[in-house]
Length: 232
Ligand code: FES
Ligand code: FES
Image 1: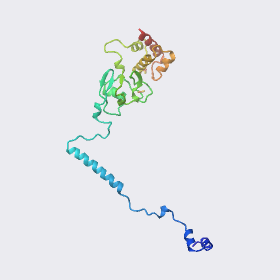
Image 2: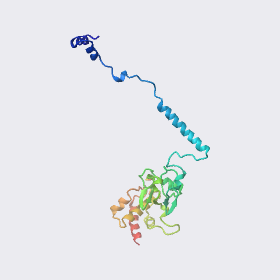
Image 3: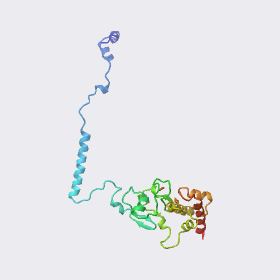
Image 4: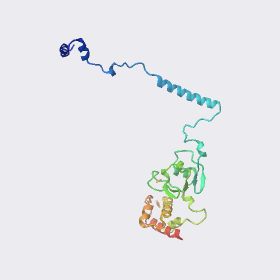
């Protein structure tokens, strides 16, 4: 026994005190690790097995496979439709499809251009229930039950140009034209909100669209001209 402890035992009176003074082992060290628990793994194995069994049962009965996600699969076709340029279209099958990709690749509306694909350039602007939005920033399924207008829906085929298109044409508001569908739809949205926009409102209205060719002066003139033409 440790000499200091022996002395204290003597001072306090005997073995009972020694038992009290014996350093205690921590509960954690005293507890034995025990047998390895198998319950969790075993039940996981059972549940995997039962899922496989259920799938086999469904196959034997000729029942269709259960879709892995409630959001995926052709059954989505039965959900609400997306109205594009006044025409109802089936909802997109892939729930991760961007609206811009859905318009271009599924519906063939390639007038919606795609530049940056992360909401900076504004090339992909469309009207969503009449308001300009960037179609590369929303999923096509989010448009279910809403009305989308692309540049193709602005004027009837073989009919006169829309006043905003006419104004861009008259004022040379475009050069390469890559940004133009986005600008035109932003201006349509702007004039719907402010039929007589101030220069500040014009700048604000087209601030989400980038043009690398025109320098914006002719686009600003086109907006003013579009406001005039819309009055007539
Ligand atoms: S492609 Fe959508 S903002 Fe650039
Ligand atoms: S006209 Fe070329 S990017 Fe605008």
